[in-house]
Image 1 (tube, rainbow over the protein chains, first blue to last red):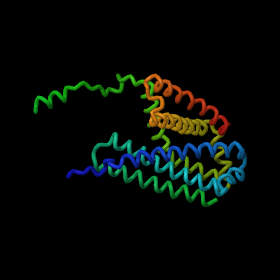
Image 2 (image 1 turned 180 degrees about the horizontal axis):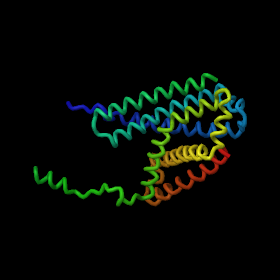
Image 3 (image 1 turned 60 degrees about the vertical axis):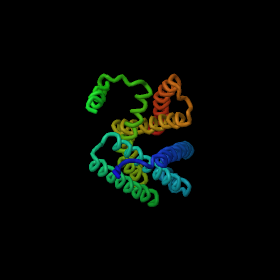
Image 4 (image 1 turned 120 degrees about the horizontal axis):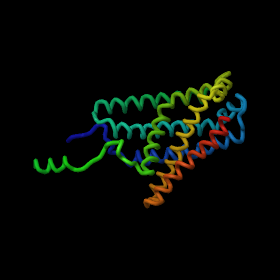
Length: 114
Length: 130
C-alpha cells in the first residue's frame, strides 16, 4: 500500500481544531482590549499588573497555545499547497513544529517570570 | 490510452497570475493567507516585544519603539494583519455555517471584511499607538 507520509487523512480533527483555536483567540482579543481600555496602562507597573493577574496569565497562555496550534495548521496547509517534494515538505513540517514548540516555551517563560 | 492522455493535456488552464482577474472574495482570501504568513513570520518579533515590555526598564524602550515612525508603521501593519485575519476568519466561520454563501452576499461580505478591518485598524491602532 502506498502511503503519503505528509498527507492529511485526519482532516476533520484538524479542521475543527483550526476553528476552535480561532474562536478562543477571538474571545481573548475582546478580553485583552477590554483589559487595556479599563486599566489604561500608561506605566510599566500597570502594564505588568494586567498579566500578573492569575486569570489573565492563564487566558493569555491559552491564547498563545491556541495561536501556535492555529499557526501550525495554517503553515502546514501552506507547505501542502506549494511544496511538492516529500523530503522538503516533511523537513519544513518538522521545522515548523520545532519553532512553534520553542515559541510555546518562550511564551510560558515570559508569563511566569512575572 | 494515449489519446486520453493527450486530451487531458489539452484541457484549458490559466495559471498566469498577471492575466487572472481575481474577484473580491478571492482577494480577501489571498489576503487572509498573506496576513497569516506575515503574522507567523513576525511571531519572534511579537514575542520579543512582549517580553521586553514586561522586563525591567523595557516598558519605556517599547514606548520609544511605538513613538518611532518606523516602529509605528510596522506595528500598525501587524495590527492590520491581525484584524484582517480576524475579520476574514469570522467570514469564513459564517460561510462554514452556510450563512451568506450565495454569490451576491459573499461578494458583499468580502468587501465588508476589507472595510471593517481597515476601520478597526484605524480605531484600535490609533488608540494603542497614539
